[in-house]
View 1 (cartoon, rainbow, N blue to C red):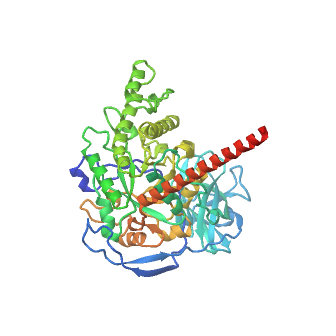
View 2 (view 1 turned 30 degrees about the horizontal axis):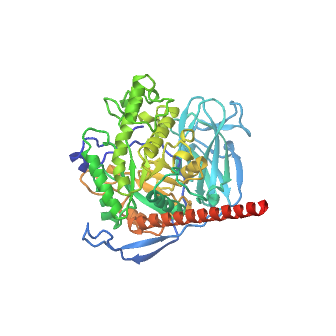
View 3 (view 1 turned 30 degrees about the vertical axis):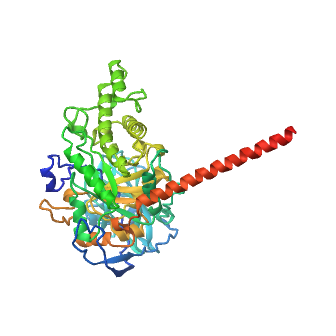
Amino acid sequence: MRHYRIMAAAVAAICTLSGCGVQIGRNESMTAPEKTSVVTTTKKQTNDDSKADEQALESYEETKIVANAIPYVKFSKSVEAETGSVSGKAKVKSDRKGYKGKGYVTNISTEEDWSREIELTDSQYYDLTITVASDVPCVNGIAVNGKKLQDFSASGSGKFEKVTFKNIYIEKGKTAISVIPVDGGLDVDCLTLTASEDISKLDLTISKPALSNKDSDYNAKALYQYLCESYGKQVLLGQHDTIGTSAETDMIYKTTGKYPAIRFGDLMLATEKDSITTDTEMNIAMDWASKDGIVGYMWHWAAPDDKREYYADQTDFDIKKAVTKENIAELSLEDIKKLQKDGKVSKECVAVVQDIDTVSEKLSTLRDEGIAVLWRPLHEASNGDFWWGNDKKAYKWLWKLMYERQTKYHKLNNLIWVWSAQNADWYVGDEYCDVLSCDVYDDGNKDAQVNIMLFLQSISKNKPIAMSECGSFPDIQSIADEKAMWAFIGQWGGNYLMTDDGKLAEENNTAAELIKTYNNNLTLTRDKLPDFTHLASSIKDTEEKSAESKKNDSSKADSKTKKENTSKAE
């Protein structure tokens, strides 16, 4: 389903495009352990932005988050559905082929009609597999001890098939599994609960972190080094702002006494005729970076046609028509237009390049100021909502074209490339991105979403993994317990954070939750960031000394070889 995320009313005075983003399909959720082991110490905050805001910060308690140790204990047990509690309209039948045991349970019309208990000896994470069948595609829910995990689908093939729910935290003792009918029409054959090692084995160490762009400048290297060193230990907090404003980051500061580490903006209007708002964006980004904040940008790219829409169902622009075998990434726009006249590239191809050049010009402002950027273009492609997600092959071509044109032709060596297509088949490859990310909108579910992290890690273990957007910040205790220490988390703005009259919207995050999220030992806010200019200089010095040492070693080796050759000649 497509949803506009309405930005704060402040944007109305700047532009009429208030919809920024799209909600993707529901992500897998899980049950987290009880939130315990919290120790608090009082810490006086100081205003690290005194020039911009003379008002002293309120004193908050910084919460010390201690992860609950949840050891893995081997366990696996399978049970038949028909041996459980069967009542109401539910019945045991044996007509459908392929069942195990003495039959299966059918005609479950309420959650109370059927359940099956399993005795667990240890409180830990489990994988739950349920074997079901249906004659038509249907959706139903699954619950553990009366708490719904999520909805799941049955294919309607008429054959029994397995559905697995990963990494559910369940307390020891009697555990009741039940089905919550939605569409109904489901036959349940058997259940299996197996202890999961996924979280206990989760390792977020990146052994040799390196940016994909070998020509990355030292500012990008400094930010990426910090990102990789923090990954798995602490989480950088980010906030998406209304275009051309700092409304949401200011709301975070007003609520929590802290600024986010990362301010995320959007270059949505960069290719419009009136790009005053984008110039404002650049000024805000430069000001943010001057205060030691991290700059991030996405690009809701309006299709390069007359309609200038970014949703696939609102534009006729066909990305497949832009694809060419010609190597155009480093050609001038004039040379590419000549190729069009010769019939070697399409008008769609030229239009795409023109827009890339336009947005690159804006980004060059930040490069020239020595500002590294977390750059997330072509987001959420694999769900097909945007015009750049109509075709997997065309999407990968477009990503590669943008990457090579921005890094090689425009020399935007300050970019750190963040991929968020969220489908393994759409991955652009380690050589074309630096961070893998996901966007999570899960109806207020505040679990750490470790299953999504594990999925992205299965795509690449060589890159840090981030939650680039979310409707609600995950609970910090769940993050600690599930070891899901995301590289960064970006809270979406607009009505996900603020009401239309500029107040805190507490439906997704209460004030108390935000204060806890921003004031603890595991999350990183702007005041905790290092001096990236100093870090960049340090990396430069280290690399130059290393290069000089290698040069001296090479000279010594050459000298030794010459002496040996001279001795042999004599």
